[in-house]
Image (tube, rainbow, N blue to C red; front, side, top):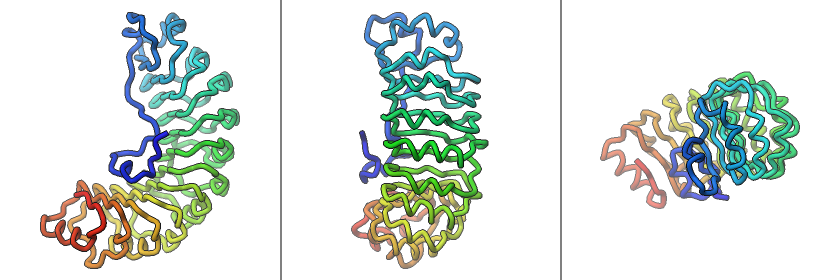
Length: 304
């Protein structure tokens, strides 16, 4: 598994534990005699999907996205070697219990659907490592957290765009979670949030992009376990305040501040001096300001 807390990973646009690239469409699968491990199912092929089951016994990655599905095709539960399932951008609200057959499943993408709850049996999928529940704004996070924290190997969780105000106390029970995405939840109570996630000792990366941030609460200093912090697209974020508070996170190695409309940084950058990487790309720094920043941070890789 590719560990995204390695420094090179922070230079990526997003942090995905597993590649989710598009695979072969069904029509190409039917015409080949090769062993098929990846399949991208076109929406108009779902009705004939079952006709090709015998050719898909080795399937490990399946994409069925943007098809306005209200229920998951029952055939999917037959792919016992499936490791990645992407059902993004449908109209799904439940997962059939037959999914317990997917014992090898590692990545489950349910982004942009209509889930209100997630089933308890997901905690029985012992190999599950990554779940994307972003853009399910009606998701009952208190119910979901009781299930998610029981998934022993879960280390990547996406909850962006879910209208979150607070995190349930159950979040402190995560044992393996390394990366948490909470972008586009502008009503999030950061004081309460930081006090909860500080108890997740395994957490390495926190993503808080597009959250309309201005002042970071004082208790960000409790997040001593963090390696990386992503604060992209928060154009009103006060840099003097941020630099001052990051001075109390000596273990922090990577900060991303992309697309924040920045023209300058504070005169003193001591809060950034411990960083290995500072990504300031897609801002509006002059060449002179870029030179000043790099001179103040000689041991930091600054990306403009």
